[in-house]
Length: 160
Image (cartoon, rainbow, N blue to C red; front, side, top):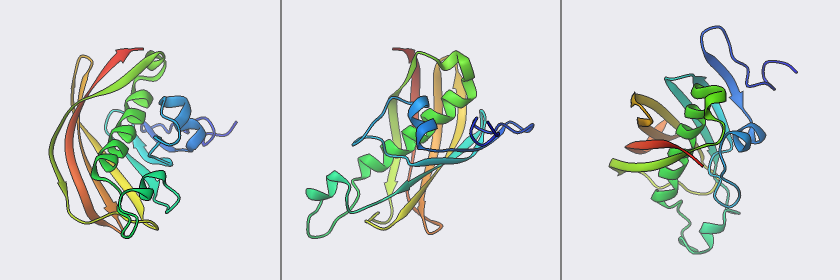
């Protein structure tokens, strides 16, 4: 197994990337609610970038909005949370087994531009702080390098 298949931890604490199989081992979300396709640029205990390839085949586009499909803002925030959850699991390592990452708060969410089918959304998550089992993050979602949404949020790490 090469370093990419194993999660690829480098000496600096960075990880090359997580493919979809590794993401599904890290967090419990599954279709149709798995909202991140790849995790890249992971620096344990610091930051991660999640990639969501937005396709017209997403089930929510059937009703949001059929004549003008737009990714719901709450799902953009959920993509941010799932990216952060993978960062938490990678940071905690074996200690994370049997734990779940639960949303606690969302603050100052802003939506600047619609995310539509064909977009590749890159979710940049930065850990702001951690106290015990409470973690705080700030995230920006970008399409073509432009911020489309941002939010601060907190999560609690608990046993299943």
